[in-house]
Length: 458
Image 1 (cartoon, rainbow, N blue to C red):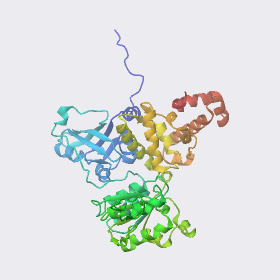
Image 2 (image 1 turned 60 degrees about the vertical axis):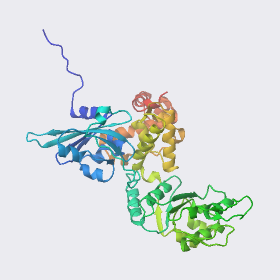
Image 3 (image 1 turned 45 degrees about the vertical axis):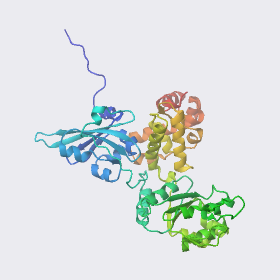
Image 4 (image 1 turned 120 degrees about the horizontal axis):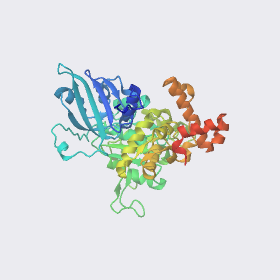
């Protein structure tokens, strides 16, 4: 009797196999005998904010030394030549349970190492594994903090900050609202010689003008009606030995700017209602999103204070000028808010692409607030349809030439189709109107909508 043909209709080509691996929920990471990365699937994007093309061909140690994950399982498996297990933390906040399996050649030497990593949110280690002697965990709370970035601009800024952090020089951080000026100030303090001393943030825009002086410099007993009977030390005095971060420094009234200048120049000040000069040892880091030069020209900011603050100048670029940070920041905030709300939401590729094509006028803070909202309101997979209209209605489309430079011809054509059809459908919500907008037949428009806009169709 003739045996039934059980051969699959799907040909198991290399391309099909890679497609299957890319749809694995686990990260799959393959190294050769020289610890060079031969393959990694798409899961690495959500773990490290890097695309496979950014990883394949590099040596494992190069990425580890840049801090993309810790600790490293690789030295252990190459040393033992046996399967190893380890709990890891990635720099964007993913917690992974990682297993490394060595593949040996006939001589007993390592030919390949296959590493699989599962997020601990979805994989609970059983007690037997937790007690396994090959598990290594790490708590390195005292390590230097790292800012999440794949941007060359930000990496150069961090390198510069590492040079100036050990000094006592005053630093002025300038940049748009929401770019992370406060995060950078904290980073500088944590790698400075004052890291064990107080770090006080004073938002000069949030404190009423008539209270700002007493908050900064304190007051003596009976200094004014309603004052504390014993007086009160100011925040600058409390921070003695440490760092004071003056956020929104452009909001300090002119009359008070002279006292700030005295603190920077002479390390001394007089509290309100007192005649006693007090000495302090503080480092000043200031930040603003205003044009201080323009304020000086308009007599709203003291020129001498500006030059005292601007000894070290750091310009933080907006998020739209470092779009390579959108993916790692998105996943970092996704891990953060999944943990906060006890959720396990994931984000679709189309949604990620939409975020990349948005201009982010509110910068990193806006992205963080958006991801929190999406974790709260979305279903298990965050789709483009979950995004607010202000995002989808204001996308910046990439020119075809830019797309073509970063991919193959076929992929460039496909990506161009996807962008055009999604933008048109989001605007018109009708195959007939899309056909008219793109000068194609309604039949073709309907087909393209079904292909590229499934998540947008109600």
